[in-house]
Image (cartoon, rainbow, N blue to C red; front, side, top):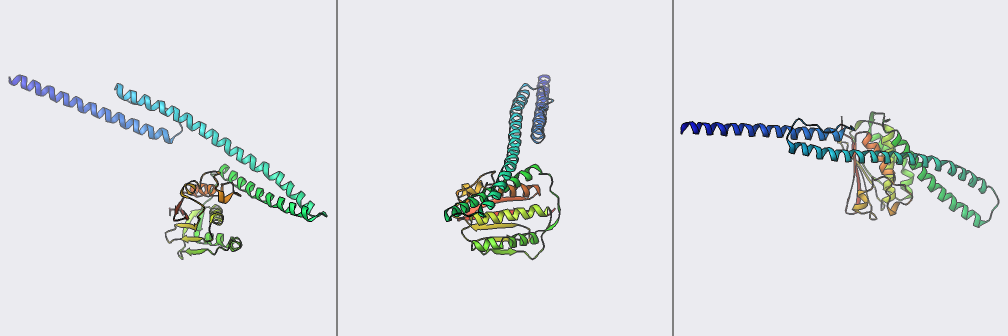
Length: 297
């Protein structure tokens, strides 16, 4: 009887050991799959997941994951190709628009020198206004095409954010005055120094101030905190949360800004991210606020 008891105990111990080994192998296989998925998602490679386990269930899981990775890779390449084609199209369109617009402006200037009736003068003024709008839009397209084609050309240096922000606000003094906007400015006396591209930062601030002028109900508040957080806020009753959530989308425009390609904030987002910063927009109680932060590295 004791012999059978010990035999039973031995069998149970062997089964427990086998189960522990099986569990260990399964955990190892799951870890291999997890690591491989993370690696395949980060890197652009054709290598599929390969595991050491011979368990048929784990192998089936790996094959399923490999199938999804193939589909994901195909979709990624399709997206990259489409994105490249769109970037090239934007570049070509921006160049194609600039040449005829320059010629039109030249002929309008010549036409202004000729004798003409008051009606003709009125028509010419309308044409000049429309041409100015087209020039503004084509310039915005051109700037965007330059930025996306030279996205790795950010040159960083020690930049005092306070100074660049003050210069950007001063540059828009005339435009703000015409809109009867008196900005409320709170800039920290502490110098906020970051490794940034000065020209790119200035463009970001200019785009954000222009955006405030487009959407503002008549106010603008600009804050630079001691920790380096930057905020542009204004009342914008014509917007809503859905529109604000899409402000950084490429080519997205709202009714309040028909003279825009919708690229201003997209350009700002691209430049901020190239300088390793973050940018976001919130909308609460009809107030639009755009937040920017560059970490101190």
